[in-house]
Image 1 (cartoon, rainbow, N blue to C red):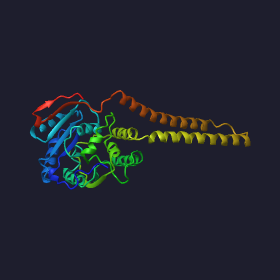
Image 2: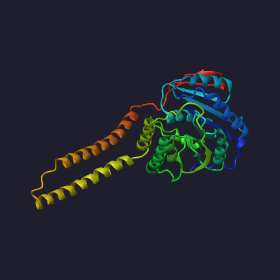
Image 3: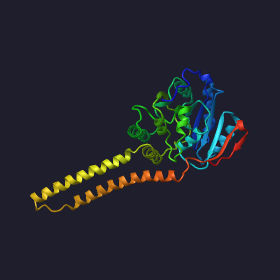
Image 4: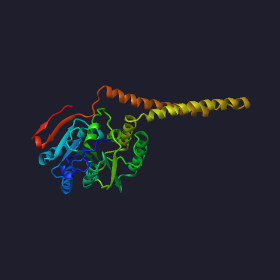
Length: 331
């Protein structure tokens, strides 16, 4: 367990970093910054926090808005990625630039109430390494809720997630845990998997899930499947073990079926050979073989890209008012 440095520490002496990956949120950002600022004032953290907005190469004018906000507010930092890397990789870019004792990760759509940040910070200050939020009255569509249930089951099997823990994208993490998380430099980051690799000192708080302020969510069914594949193949060998188990089971089934067919042919020589059953068997075994080869290929592909130095993210620009200048960085 990570050393409990901040236990019984007053919130007034804690620095908080809030990391928000941004994509297609141009009209929401000013309101988002205002609401977070109000919440920090009410928690007496007005001068003890920074807000890191990571533009994941959004196709709208999100970066222009972030740059303006960084000029207007001392606590706003802007990071602009050179291309779209995905939510988790953008989050990793933000985590590599935090300076706070406690790091809060949240979405850019105001479905996560900023008022909950104080409770999360308090939970970390009381000794936990991580504080996740559990949504009440979720505002997501049905397919997304069902997908979350499947993802919950998969993370339980593949990542060893504690039972009953919901891996929300709204969470607070102790700084020294973040330092361990950002040691991962692979191209397929999955923040929750990295956190679970580091610690099991985790608590949760309940929050009211807010309706999205404007527009629609950025996660489609395809991107959700891609995220699940990242979780399953980047942090667990269970899919490979499953493929091995299926292959072994089919081999046993084939031996049994050969025995049954042989016995039937001996007892009933008049039984004609079954063309339909033969084709069905070939297609079934071929499909399973293709599935297993695909799983192996997924692992090999990720290993190949990692060995060839595929970047986790690349930064095009950094901006914040305290420096009075903009930096160019080609990480």
